[in-house]
Amino acid sequence: MSSAKPPTEPVPRAISGHDSANALDPCAARGPDSSLSFKFCGLDFASPIVLLSGCVGFGEEYTRIEGFTNRDAGAIVLKGTTLEPRLGNPPHRVYETPAGMLNAIGLQNPGTDHVVGRILPELDFDETRFIANVSGSTVEEYVEVTRRFDQSPIDAIEINISCPNVKEGGVAFGNYPEMSAQVVAACRRVTRKPLITKLSPNQTDIRENARRCIEAGSDGLSVINTVMGMAIDVHSRRPVIGNVQGGLSGPAIKPIALLKVHQVYEVARPHRIPIIGQGGITTATDALEFIIAGASAVGIGTALFYDPRVCKRVNDGIADYLRENGLNTVSELVGTLRAGK
Ligand SMILES: Cc1cc2nc3c(=O)[nH]c(=O)nc-3n(C[C@H](O)[C@H](O)[C@H](O)COP(=O)(O)O)c2cc1C
Image (cartoon, protein in one colour):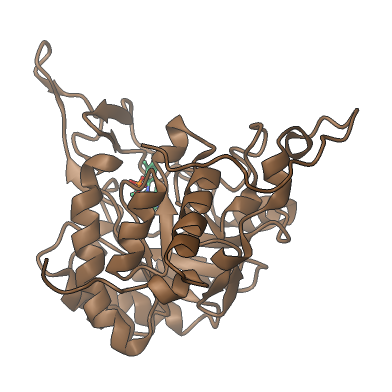
């Protein structure tokens, strides 16, 4: 499964008496290969890897784990944030499925004031780029949250119009191109920061939605959010997930996500709108498939839950592939899918 290879560079000695994770893991100090750096919506990314919203808390989640560093990611997307704090859905909120997981967290978060006032000042913006994930129940709420992040040090704003786990807003906007475009256009008016729209796979034609979001002013697209699903406890004959339905993520959705990226790329390419491809990526080969399909960056979410060191493996595997194929940068590989067999 893993395409990780032993380090080819001499391994520096850990500094004695220094107990930080980076000192213990010599590879961590090295950072991603320089061939992996590129610009995404005008921002410098050290790697094509983006750690996905809801899977990495507010940027601090894995930093205590030996061998993990935020520097291995080109960007980190913070947990979905609404104007007011939210407690989220009743349990169970997560459930493991064959090759994936269902979740219905329900956008639990401490609210925009807390995120902007307390959490952002604690983040180290030298480590990586940080992207806010904006959610809401009304267009006005999306706009207000976007406005507050616009006045913060955050690097970019991702609009989550595709959350399947809340009763109002979320996917109710994302599944209808006209409503998606309204949200994007309204948020566009209140920020000059890069605006990335996260598209739902739970709709008839993702291409049309992507086109409308681009016309409305989106600078980038995240493809895809989770796929709606459910699980039933046959003993109680009740839904396992408290919210009845949840979002399916992990390797189970990878083929769906890959096709959606391929479809959205057709629409986004003429406008030079970059895509963060995501859905079930766990290896460098998965990531390469998404890049060849048209993704400029690749998101990793669920894989972090069982392997927080996945970023290093994926970075190394992509860098090896570039070398072996005579490519100097990841950008040279984006959208290079050959027609037919
Ligand atoms: C537990 C959990 C919470 C999530 N929360 C959010 C969220 O708050 N906002 C959002 O846009 N996406 C959220 N997502 C979706 C992920 O960001 C990602 O798009 C999706 O899981 C597909 O990627 P993966 O298969 O690598 O996990 C969440 C996913 C999981 C598993």
